[in-house]
Image 1: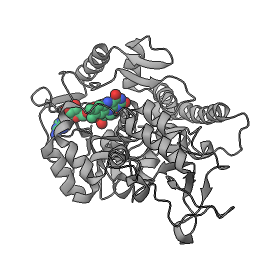
Image 2: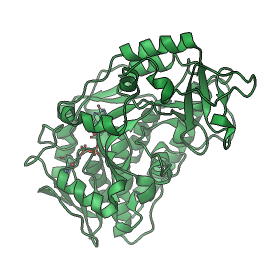
Image 3: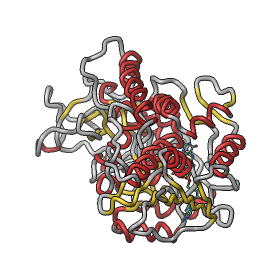
Image 4: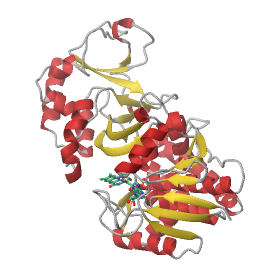
Length: 442
Ligand SMILES: Cc1cc2nc3c(=O)[nH]c(=O)nc-3n(C[C@H](O)[C@H](O)[C@H](O)COP(=O)(O)OP(=O)(O)OC[C@H]3O[C@@H](n4cnc5c(N)ncnc54)[C@H](O)[C@@H]3O)c2cc1C
């Protein structure tokens, strides 16, 4: 039986270990706790939830709700534990965080084919199958090793991302496609503002509530802000600063009327299909409800559906489209897999899902078989494809959402709820097929 190394017993590492042994591998799981802990980890157990105890929506018409259902049907340890330790939380799935982690720790520790080594890992062997899942707060020595392995510019330590909205939720009776000075093709969507609209927006933006920084991020705040300034910080420098920065109106005319504007917010295509657009230059540290309130004041975005809110936080992640395949293996050395938040998935469940794919594939590789690629119509497969095939030039971590799933063959009438239901049914049919295949994979 072939051994697989797994680094990190977090959400991704535990799921990867569980799937790997399920498919006949032996696993050595290396975890630096309890000897060394990241600034956000406090307990000695595995799969620690470092912040909220909510695993977010339980509805299959929500991206992460669908991902959870797929994982459950396919035999995920993280989801098994979540269902066993859940607490009442309305439409969300929340867990008792202590019981949740203890359940997973017991399962992993008592498995005869999983050996545990409590040690910080600082390098990756080139000729052994290894899944690296050391998380967004990977220890410094390991981060520096990975950075050398993949090239210094491909590992980021902060996430400074602008919000992404659903293309269909943009009101194109107010917004329009145009390019500055008519140069190149008109790929940007422009949301125009009058002077009054700008002033009201400016006031709301500068008065909006920002998210709390984690204690350990406070010392690193300056570094984040120098590289990529949050839009609200830029705004606080003066009423016109944004009009000379991300809201610059010069050179942009409405092609239908020839009209020019006091300020303009530009939206850039986030994916090839054009189903998602990001607000250019709007990286932000506002709380999520405040982003929804303030950014919906932008003409054309009154009913915007947010696929991802803007964030600014400490986060070690790779420029994965340049580096990884959809089985989460490193293109330059297919013995090495990465999993979890560091691959550019965002969230507890998304991290576990990438561990599911990487662990399965590590075992498949150990058995001498070809990679097992999860279909893009499933949320688990769509995330793997986003990570491997997303935009190399502006790759940003992403939650599970319907914007990354291939469009349906036919347009669904009746609005977003019905469309998402159709996506979910298509995905779950595939997940049921996958569940059967996975039973006999190796
Ligand atoms: C402060 C913070 C708050 C977050 N809050 C939320 C939230 O509320 N909801 C949400 O959905 N997502 C949240 N996330 C994002 C993300 O979902 C979690 O970080 C998630 O735990 C990522 O899973 P993972 O398996 O990639 O990493 P982790 O769960 O962090 O697991 C990594 C493991 O690797 C170990 N490790 C690190 N370096 C080494 C090494 N060199 N050798 C051996 N072991 C090592 C760590 O001790 C840890 O156990 C948050 C992230 C951060 C940083």
